[in-house]
Image (tube, rainbow, N blue to C red; front, side, top):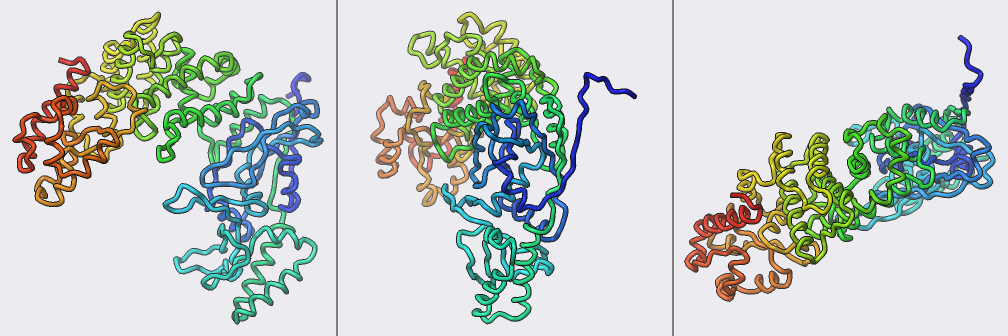
Length: 582
């Protein structure tokens, strides 16, 4: 079969090199393309890689793409990181000016980065019960015989990240792995120096022999073996490179679908760097959602933004690799500013309502709000006009109930499609957020609408400690800006009472009917006073606002079950009124 002359012939070269030869190429001639994801391996995976090398196990082949000479000068490349962290690290970007033989690593970033981190770099290890980390380097326990099982029956060499170099601890002698680079031509000085130090600890001859063998094995791994076996693709078409990249990364540490879709965007965006834009925007939205709170989880991820792009641009909701073709990617780039604006406003409004990374149980619930804002760019949900306030209340109640009911949990593509159709038909041209129509669509999708009476009654089953407990309680109040109010979830009958004379009611003390939201300062003052004294000082307006029964008989500790029953009734009345449900 003859090949068309217009179709370039692909050439694939094969080579095997030593680690000491490859390390200098990283960030000098070997770089990462923008379509690559970031480093995701943890410390244990790095240790396992070095253990495999010490055992002379194959570590699979690598795949490179040699960038055509005419495309090198102005090309954006990403550097391999040499300082990994339990908290994550972003690769830095730079121009490929002056790189004469530029190659992109399409498959093997995790392994090559691990070698760089383990031999020449550092790893920031998260401290237990702390938000900070400690910078450590990879060490090898020279006294650990990698051929013998340890106390737990495991057979492995003793690699570990540690803060200090060449230290002795509990029968171990830790050697910093990177020090081996100083002894390429002759290992004898290192052996003599190390064995002399070890003899000072009165070690046995077998232990000295183990240390000697470990150093010789490490030297062999870095300077004698050729474990880096790689293919180099020389065909200069980026579309082909993308296809090879997707297929090469379908195994091993498999790329997720959002990462593959981002690869498509990266190749097809012209004016913007899709990877940098996406990473920065995801970080920004999580900061906005959590208002800088470290304890809140990172709820918004890349797939949320990609899914939002499809919904906002009226494209097919169920995203697939093939869906992000050149036309779709270019369309997303063209409307990227408007897309970001709508998503940002939806996230900031949710945060304003008091929703954060903990209570946002389904990020997809934000997408209909973003779509509504995208179709109505003049709407101001945080405005002060009567229409703005009414609209914000509608969105707040719908969004909170959608989260409580799990409307967008699981596979929500169909629900997103229905919600988009409703907003397109009933929620444009300055019209209010169409809650009733959305509820009809939700019921059609066989999910609980936000105004379902049974779902409203189930709110009473939420207890203290549940991630959405505070979110449910905000529905009882008129305030919209809970995200700006310092507040605590408080037990009306304090927990201290149930540790004393009300132990028989302790299991019921965390029910929603015994909870309310108090101003942070007010809650501190309450805790400083006996309950009987504090409750008597509350004015009628406070009692009504917090749905505390006005019958003082119910304030007595022994009447706690009757108090719960009456306050449950008051809560349900308020919820049905707020949600406009008969």
